[in-house]
Image (cartoon, rainbow, N blue to C red; front, side):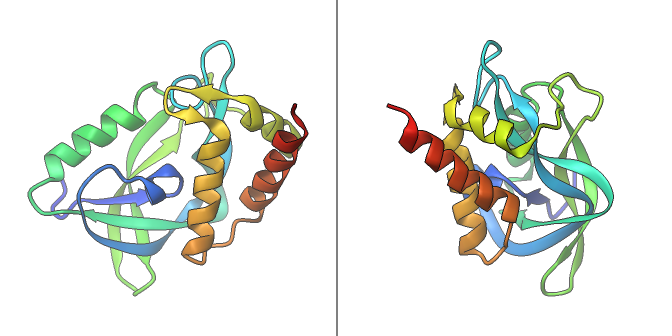
Length: 180
């Protein structure tokens, strides 16, 4: 286990890390982009009506801005166990240790959850189809739209622009307002 333990968050971990944090720093991970490319059958959807959640999708020339969290000293084992329970609920995510660059110039190794592109939950859908799914799906942790709205709002709050998430959030609100 790493000491210190760093975790890279790019979706719900940004607004709900779920573990004691000693330090949080805006960071960048190369080789991946944030994408609603994972069908959610537990947290934000069901097997019968999957939602969509964010995953790190490999792309050689891409990078993803997010937050690097340093777990509070003495909580490393519990943090890793909790993350594995939360993130590895299905085998769609793969746990990796990835090099991450912090905005202050430090280079660290961080636990990161990336999509398994060979997994049945992996998908690439047009943005409108993503919006339609997210607007309606609900899972064990609540509405899929709530997940999108929280992630988009927290990215904006820390100054990280994500035009795709902003478009999706606006479109999902439109769909929600049109639904009786």
